[in-house]
Amino acid sequence: MASSILVRLPAELLESVLIYLPNRDIKNLRLTCSFFRGAAHLRLTRVFLSPNPLNISVFRAIADHETLRGGVTEIIWDDAWFGSPIGSYVFDWSYPFDGFDDPFYEGLWHYEGLYEDSDYEFDYDQRPYTGVPHWFSYTCKKNIEEFWRRKGTDVDTQEYAARTQQVESQLPLEDSWSYYQALVEQETNVIATRADIHALRHGLQRFQSLKRITITAAAHGWLYNPLYETPMIRAFPKGFNYPVPRGWPCAQDGHPRPRARVWDGNGNNHNDLENQWRGFDVVTEELHWQEHQVSELLVDAHLLNTGLNCRVFDEGNTGDVESILMRLNLKRIDLDLLIVGGEVESWSSFPQHSISFTLDAATALEHVSFRTSVLSDYRSESITQPVRLRSIFPTDEWPKLKHLGLSGFLVKQADVLSLLASLPQTIRSVELSFLRFSNGAGSYGGLLVDIRDTLDWRDRAEYARPKVTIGVHLPHRSAGRAIWVDQEVYDFLYRDGENPFGFNGDSLNQVPQAKGIVRDSFDPTYERPWVGLDTYERMGYHDMGPNRVF
Image (cartoon, rainbow, N blue to C red; front, top):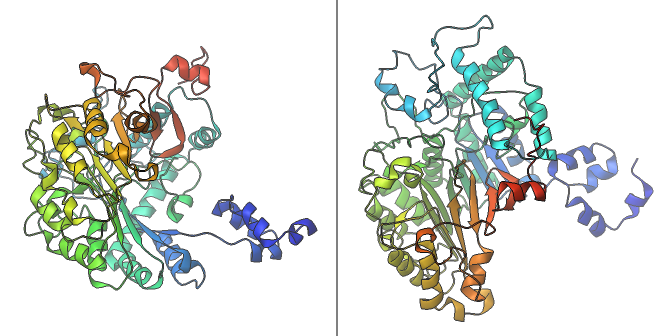
């Protein structure tokens, strides 16, 4: 029975306490007594969907709940399915295996970078006495190595302690393999019956407050550190080690980016492959034909080296996308794009005119964010021809625009400035991340000077001054982690502060230490100033002691 004190608390005061509890704790609280079962309500604003029966079951249960369905504003489509033949750090080995000369594997083997260790040899068909194939056991081993690499010398926080406990409590390898096979089988059945598509169609009808759909390949995050705790992921047994799926073609840090081949109209890049971007195809198809209230569409790679095949915007393929944008009256669009391979000397593969033509139809846009994968390629130093930004972004058609994000483009400083100058008075935030300035054509430091001295932003009322955020790669890249500079940029633009990129021509694209914040897009607890290792140790972030175990 609930304490008499809690029972007598005013509802407003009790709610102000419960608001700090995550849904997981609220569920447990509701089990304690009848009072909290009636007073503590779940706060469900987003639901998850993928070709998994548990995700579908929970999705449908919420859609059919007369109270809970009213609070749902976002559907997150997990497009990282286990059976996707490429796009994760391993393949779907159920595909008929004709050796590594099979055209199916041409190029992909190197991109995944899993088995490049010169001291590791294996036979695909050989299985140890456990019955687990080598590729699975090897991938699980690499998962643990990646776990410790990402942890590095960080101190054992509460979050790390929980993940470390999972590492130390791994299931027997044969149990993980058996559980993984069951997931693949369930997924195959769902895709065959289109149960996830039928569920999406049902949700579009039932979620009357729905405004956003996010399609992502990053839901699984990293081992024991998912980006989203979907019902399926929450149900994983403790210590379950498995090949973390990405769904879309994806490269590890430091490896060549995967190729996005010409779009054939159905999203396929190989006659024998299932749709690599199945989620995008499904969602856009349903949005085109069903009644709904969706006004925000996000395609999110979450700083992984992947994205939506940019050739979806090619001439002849834009019909569906354009009609969707016109019909949706979109207010927000975020697109992470995978640029076609084989033409790194230029952006000739980037369909800039088709994208602009498509975006012309979305005149109600308030938030636009574009990111490309090209400059995550170590070979991209050879790219010399920037994209003309004004040919992509029809800012004259966006009178209500509040946010513009530009990431991973090769640019000229004057071109970026021209784009910023064309933004409407409604603009409130701008992200300029991971840009590469064409040789002799500018820098972050120079761009900030031009923004301050040539645009009228400084003269606007404080509430109307656009906040500019700049993101740059860490010296040693790690997917999802970067240096973000915002407060120092604001101080320079509007408060006579120092230029955070300095005035030395050789370092105008580099952030000196003590400027900016390091963040991990997969871990909200990973946030720290950009300083040296010794300073991190003094601040309590790192443990560099002699007994440190790596």
